[in-house]
Image 1 (cartoon, rainbow, N blue to C red):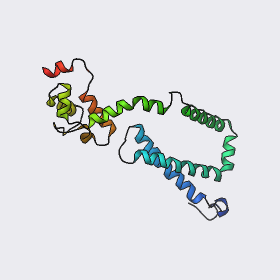
Image 2: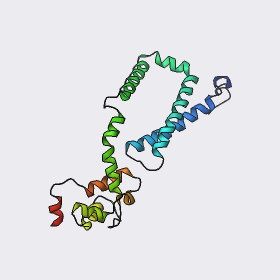
Image 3: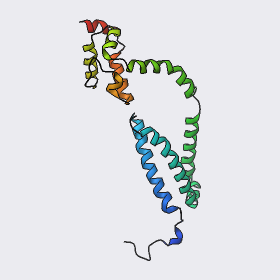
Image 4: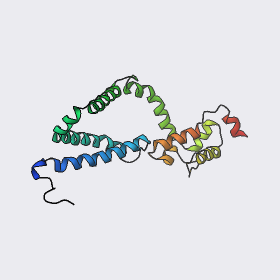
Length: 189
């Protein structure tokens, strides 16, 4: 129980601490939650934009929080563990920012035709895809149902069935184009 003697004096709290600490905690919670969503490939709704924009708010809150607690922070950084964790974090950040894979722009340009082809195929009705693949349309519907994509009809498109869920689109396209060399023979049986 807090008594008047054990309560912190008002002088110990800075004016920004009242709102910076709750701001940091709230944005951390949102950034962590949306980050987990992105890790598990949740790509619907506002997960990605909220994660990206609130991470800036988290950064601002964390910097102000560090400034407000600078004496404690400096005390922690004077120890071995504080230096080790900060150095490890800095090295990981530097490694993450290095263009080891050739850069995102190169990768995007390299894969753009494939993406455009996939997006086009996602808009074509299953009956037309079946004709182009030389397989019965019922076979595609069965494959989609087996992949967990229900309500497929010959007039359905992958885009209609999966909506904005990229993971579901990928599953649907993998069901329609399984890559097996013997699939036509199997479908004709």
